[in-house]
Length: 299
Length: 299
Image (tube, rainbow over all chains, first blue to last red; front, side, top):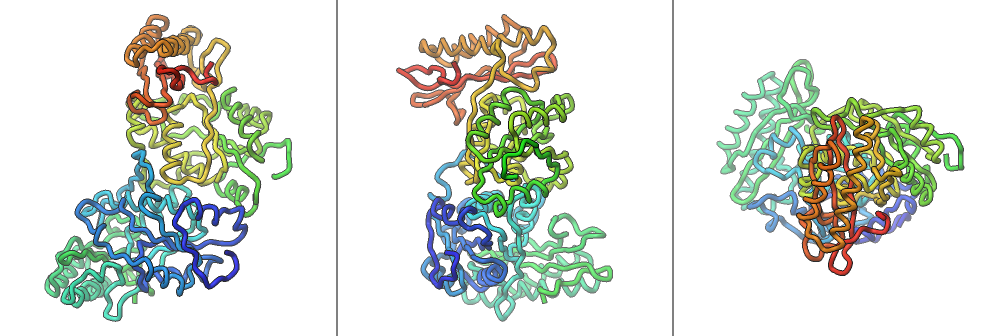
């Protein structure tokens, strides 16, 4: 496995993966880990690209994690395509793809939960209670199974990333967390596996989300205050699409507290619900001359 | 560090310990881990003895963990003796002793908590809310810092052990958990760092605890039902000491649900409060001919 092989290895059991990635076997070989829920798109593949540049081998997991879906959410309708995913992963240079069943990941449940703190109360946490408990559960399990040197997360799920960074820091988890910028369609819509569930009309309306965030970022650079920015972003989305606003919020990042003097980075984030599809997007901005302007990788 | 040295290494920072125990450095060397709160006694040293038999190097942590003490509990008065502990650990053959400060272990707090399930509602969990959250927090941190092959826990803290076993199983934590039997004084009192906080009179009365549990075990072997056993154990302790009963409970082990037909193992456990000192003890029993009798290592 430690030579450059064109063949991807598909592993379905925890035991086989742990044996393969045992530190006594892999010696000084570094492992980059890309956890996904599958239905891969260019965003996932940018995680793989960066992981390949920084590690000897790349492990991707594909697991639609029931623990992070609430009642009435789209666990059943979340798009899946195992064979296409394996092919895309192989073409991108993934060495091992881990595709466990739900029974393999959750054979027992002693009721222990990892509860995030204040960071989980904002943004998606408000409308998805328990979501980040389920994320932390699967992420800790996957970290323990894969034992990665570096783990790659996309900035689209910025709140998830902030909570995982906090968990890794506070609990001394032995992996480095690497933030990877959002990949967008040509018209600006953030890449998401859920985009395929949009109707044709919704798909064209959904471009309003990123345009609205860009307008918000311009207002921010001009010194507008967070509540004014949030209001204008919301109004733009409502006026230019059939999407319903779940939230539009500007907060300090990654702490997710209110924007106060001294916050180095802020996030302007939103969630918008189309008929059966909830989309999220964000822009991260840094302090500059007394206002917040988008980071270079956001432009 | 991987040759047999008579000198114990005392390490105070996470970074130094992680560098020392890095898997790339230690290769196939196995690490046995003995987490303690210090003030070492023969119980701790039996953990070390077993760890030495099964691993190449033994790491002990000494950390009185504030996260597992509630308001009004004995965090401040918990006995401490750093120099004596280091000497005892060295004599027992510990290779590395990790003694971090509270600031080293908890420099940041993003509010993430690990909440145990139903196992934590019984026994000590009822009178020590949050106790097992604090235990799981420090245990996960220490496992991540030390990365042990095997970790050794005493059966006196049987509920703690049950919850840790559940956590390790459900979250794929990469260490084997080894149960080590209770070590007792000649008069039967379970070894505990807190025993030194008993008055002279309380110390002599405290022997009633184990005598009461033994009476309970005899009743169990005769087929008495759990509630009758609990009542008689309580009555014996109250009649023969000034201790106040926190609980006397017989439950399935390690699940800590009610004793039902089919439970392979049960625990008869108690907590007794003397003036300023709360003591716990237990006997684990296994099913035999329709009743529960103490395990061999309990006799």
